Image (cartoon, rainbow, N blue to C red; front, side):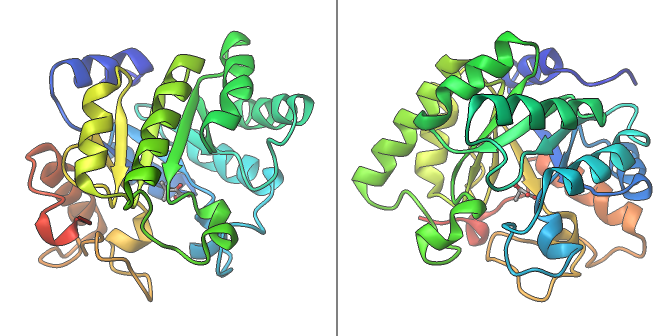
Length: 263
Ligand code: KIV
């Protein structure tokens, strides 16, 4: 198997083939995720919660992200590695460029940033200089204090319209991928069909081009999980089995189901 690239994911979208993303933060799990057949690995700033024990992603720094990106990228020869830019690491052009460079030099093939229209200039700046960008809309965890908790987004017509407009704008700015988190499935399906770039869903129903889950959640290790999470360890005796079960379920259209979906 060769290295997955943006072109691989574009072709999969064009062919209606679902792809898979799983978070990983170290070399061993990156290898297992890659061997399970996940096309992409996200070094998520969720590490602030699942590794560091914080109650949000806000304390995570670019140094933390660069360290874990290095660990993952050494062990994921086939999967495309996406690294999260953490809270307040992309507020202005120079800072954005410096921090995105640090993550790419740590081994990422793409950086992820939370936000819509206001990110357009930053996305264009990075893309023009050779750094691919994945945007993240809907429930963007770095804005948890603005939202007043980890709440489903896009439920009112006004919010839904604004998320769709943001999605179109970040695509026009040059983003290669989009993550949609915790939005109604009808909205996610509509956005996925309107955009040319692949859309990865989490708590966004079955109509997106791909699915992502935080590894600790899908292995049943997290204390609290949202309704969209399935414990893929159930019925399995090994972590490898659970990772493969998730990959196969997404590709077969068997995950997510109605009970994982927000309306
Ligand atoms: O940080 C992360 O793991 C994420 C996923 C929840 C998409 O952003």
